[in-house]
Image: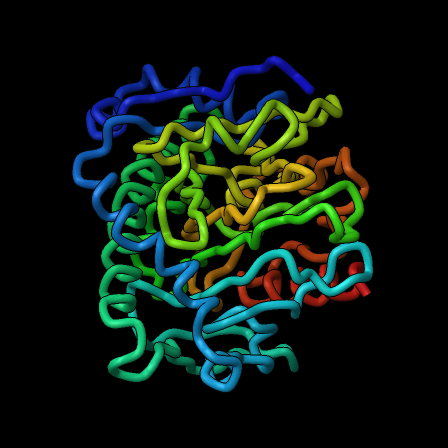
Length: 357
């Protein structure tokens, strides 16, 4: 494991839009970075996080029939409830469950598994089932989205300073106009010693294909919903890790009341490779003694019809970065000049599913 530290910035720096952030963006999101940074001291965020995360465990207590009504197989199970539908090294991933929804709007467009883009809507439990869940999900998701848009403003300035032909304001525009931004509430089930899983990964190596991903720190809960300190669960070999292009595994430590933002492949494309997405995974301990891991990720993404264009005069070859894990589908098989986000997303979903069969 590497001793490389995760770049930390203050929310006040983000609001000021000062050029002093440029060096931190280069360190975090450049070719030698880990593709992530942490934003500290965000007003009102801790309460919103604490309100939503226990619902991740509450969902798993609902009966099977109710959960099946909340699934969307036609959308690669990336809307509503999903458990055991993803595969890890060819095996159904039973160690985590997810709930996907778009907090910005209940109506949006998504890529279906046939490849076409259709109108969709969120799936929420019926009234009286998990009271407060929908409101808590939207409240946290919309708040993280606003913080992400502020970061996007700064990223646009950084790219423009390094690439004069960059379409100024492109990332902010994509995110501000998007209804496609997706929240994913995650529950990682307790791991017992008799579970057979390769390398004890809660989540295998992958890149995020969107623009930015806002990540909450994990909340650990026992069976009675008592919160357990992460310090008693995680060690240096467990938690969230990123892989650098120098084949270093770096643990991404997110303070409890802070937000991490990972750079996604859409940003890698529109910046001509200046910003670099990196593979990341979640590694469990061999046994968590009845303790679950719960967190929330917000995938800030363009609308499906938005074109993903590299800056004029940029060589597309700079976008195709080497994957140090050999587990992420190659970018040149998923994106080519002229692709919309919808087409890129469909190719990405298709190849991850194919690679994991």
